[in-house]
Length: 161
Image (tube, rainbow, N blue to C red; front, side, top):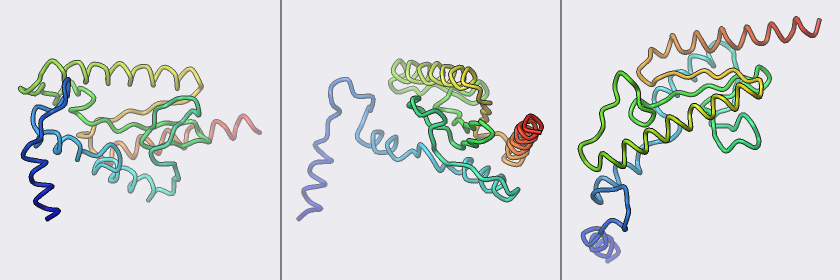
């Protein structure tokens, strides 16, 4: 009985006025896309963790900033973002969709503007921002993160001496 009600509600689904979804199937598909713990993020985190570095996952670098970084190294003041090619407008791989292209082009443009604003705010607060595309080799990303964290930690120790 519950399945019948669910099927009826799905078959009679219509997108709300002004909805970004062109169909119920598209809506379900887009809602299933992860905003954290993606495969590239997990691979990079695993490699960084194996090097003995510890970090916060999906954390806000600054308390008043309503943005989360994929990895945060608080003492070193490093925020890491692993950006998806579609959502963040990768110059190599982003292809605008054929369905509802106006909405999605605007959405990606807003995401890019928000990313730039986040970078600027964090930099002004003394943070180092590292951004990687999801298609970049995980080992290279992890090596760059590790080198930056170690360099920041060493420079902080030298200041304390």
